[in-house]
Image (cartoon, rainbow, N blue to C red):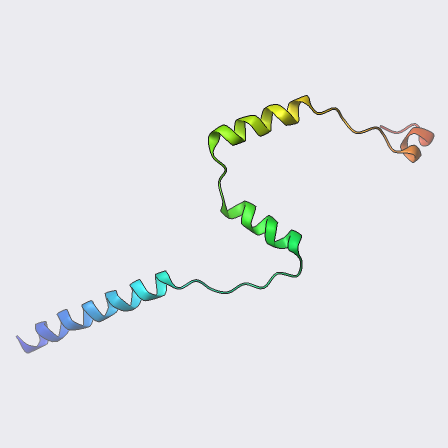
Length: 76
């Protein structure tokens, strides 16, 4: 019986440790602001309404003009 009590106590301590570890976040260092923004964008989902509006807005954008060297060389 003493072994069972010890086992229960051990499992509660394990649970507390795992909860503490899951609550802690690791610090990250970014080389540039752009890198930070890219990381944040991967972690954050935009609300569906905003994603739809952004998609429609991008469809209405015209393609950028070809660069001078592509026009000169006749490449697309």
